[in-house]
Each structure stands twice: as structure tokens, then as C-alpha cells.
Image (cartoon, rainbow, N blue to C red; front, side, top):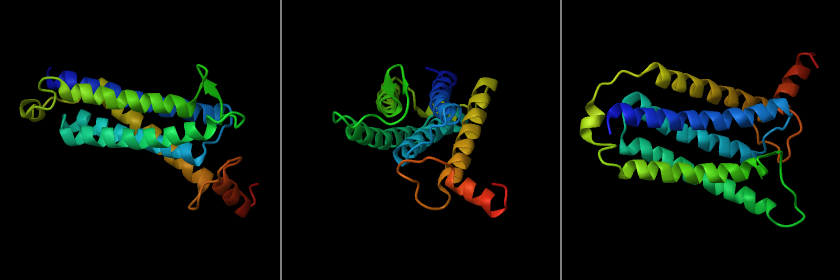
Length: 191
């Protein structure tokens, strides 16, 4: 496996993290479903895992980059499993809309597990993190640059949205409005 192939696989992982965040962001604005604190933690875990993939895209594959991905995915899986456990009891209902019949926290748990397995398989492949591949000075292709730029934009947009929802305090358990944004608009008489 060449460094170019490995970096492309990492770019696809980065694109997957961006796609998950974009879908969640789309539901947030299209359907008006504000993310709960556990949802925000899951988004943060996808962003952190994406950073590991981004490092491998930009600087080449290293075990430490994959360690970031795996640890982030494990943390995200724990948060997702906690949210699944909260809503698995009969009569409690779910939180938010579904996609393909599953709630987002269930899909997130599946995605985190797939990410852990995928990176594990990549680490087992011959030479995926060999010094020869790390030292190759491949330029970052247009596709990989686009994946990096998309990821940065999506993470920044999610960060701005989280600040607008929660401000500098704790996020509400069952959010119904952008508290910090509404407070700021009210302060200046715009609301």
C-alpha cells in the first residue's frame, strides 16, 4: 500500500466524519432539532476523530494519528451507548428524528464502532504506517485538500452553533432555543 493510498483512505475517513456532522447539522437547521448535551459530545467525538484523520492526510500516516481516531471513537461510542441506554427502556421514547429507522445516537454508535474496526484493520495492513510511507513527501491532492477544507468548515460551523445554543454555560438538557444567541439579540433590542 502506498502513502497515496493510505492518505486517500484517511481522506475518506475524514469525509465520513464531515458527512456525519453535516447530516446532523442539516437536521438541526432544516427540522429545528437542537442537539442535546450528549449529542454535542458525540459531535465533538466525531470532530476529534476527524482531527486524527486530518493529521494523517496532511502529515502522513502515524500510529499516534490513529490513536487519536481510536480514542475519540471509543469516547464517542461510550457517549452514544449511554444515550441508547437512556432511551432503550420501554415507554421512554427516543430523542429527535430518525434516519433509516434509527435515532442518530444509535447510528453514531454504529459509526464509532465501524471507525474503530476500520482503523484497526488499517493498522494491521502491511506497511500502512511504515517509516518509508511516513517519509514520502507526497503533495496533498485536490481531493484531500477539499476534504480537509470541508472538515474545517463543518467543525467551525458546529462550534459557532454550539456557542449560540449554550453560550459559556451548561447546555440545557432539552434545548428549545438558541439561548446565547437569543440573549445577545435581546440585549441589543433585536428580538
